[in-house]
Amino acid sequence: MDKISILGGKTLEGTITISGSKNAALPILVSSLLTREISNLDNVPNLLDITTMKELLISLGIKIVAKEKSLFIEPSNNISTHADYELVRKMRASVLVLGPLLARFGEAEVSLPGGCAIGSRPVDIHINALKKMGAKLEIKDGYIKASVPNKKLVGADITFPKVSVGATENIIMAACLAKGKTIIRNAALEPEIDDLITVLNKMGANVYRSDSNKIEVEGVISLKGFSHSVMPDRIEAGTYAMAAVITAGRIELLKAEEKYLKNVIKYLNRVGAKIESTNNGINIEGPKVIKNIDMKTEVYPGFPTDLQAQAMALMSVAEGSSVIEESIFENRFMHIAELVRFGANIKNEGVKAHIVGCKALNGAQVMATDLRASSSLILAGLRAEGETIINRVYHLDRGYENLEKKLSMCGANIRRI
Ligand code: UD1
Image 1 (tube, rainbow, N blue to C red):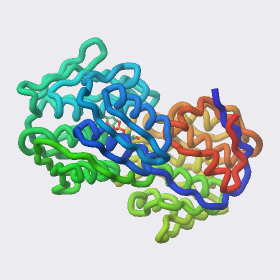
Image 2: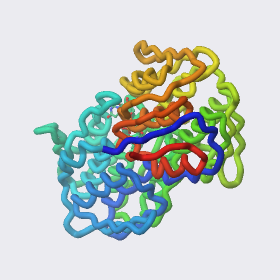
Image 3: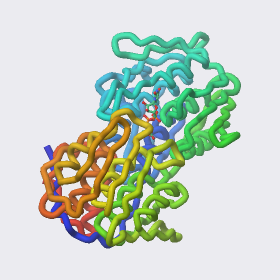
Image 4: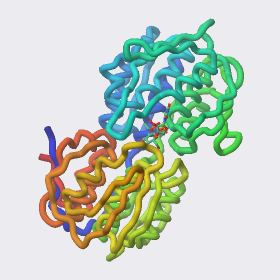
């Protein structure tokens, strides 16, 4: 199994081009289930999660041809409505096929995605919303077995009990082919959802945010193919911005979009970084000494949970103590035990982590536990004195395209072994 070795202590300087967003590309790929026509998706990052989604769609009967960063997506006349456990278990976002399959074919059998390292992650919000749209759903043999009387979902007025990115995407896609109007209240505000909405409207759907967290969808009879370029990945951009901060370096992030990173930039300014937005992206310069700042993750536009672990790596070498509170996921502190191996001083109490900044980190053997936790270990390794070996790097391959290459180009001593 691949490992990553880092010889830390280098100040990073250079330019990194931000790839297409994983979390935007995944639902957009799924939206191809809503049409009979050919679609073309550009700026698709080459990641394990994208491969998993391609495999799932291919297993359902969609033909996908890749050419560099472009995917040509061609549905067949014979789409299966069975999403198998073997593919769904690899990635939770697979559950996004449920809404589109039900909307187009009136039936679907999708494996339950199950728990993962960061908590139980239920799908009750997806299921209850589809029930409100007229679907009959039951959980049997580990599968969500769903069908719609008369094969047609019906628009409904739905209020989510909790903000959920995936449920918002699933229900928007389902509503596009439902009869009548669907209103989603307490919808998530993530920009990746708006990238999906742009695609759906290109396909002939009628989806709009009538208020920031209220989405309205007028159902249509059928949808066309689309051509689209995926938005840049704000979480990748935030991670490399923090690489500049933790190494007191200077990195230009090409294609990074400031408007989607406002609260992250605010936080990084407070820890002492200098950040400037240009026509091409964002320039970031890390401080000599990182200031200790408390932080709480929140739904967008708040500080993203997907950058919480990375922020903890920064705080582990800050000049004083800080508290990080995780408000989205119940168990997203797996990286604490690994950061402690570098010599970090972190204690976990419920949803809070108490961090006492230390002068230096020491290279260590550590294990990646989930995607974003892994990137916090990369950041700690870049800062630490001596060699760091990160095991289970497949977690990183799920979400960071060409990570070693991008960091090496900025002077990091990092390689895959
Ligand atoms: C998406 C992102 C993920 C990010 C997360 C929160 C993708 C592919 N993944 O995940 O990177 O960390 O948003 O910003 O875009 N919940 C329920 N019931 C449900 C659905 C969710 O209780 O039916 C809970 C979850 O357990 C969690 C919270 O709601 O505590 C938010 O989850 P959600 O926004 O749905 O996350 P994902 O869409 O899975």
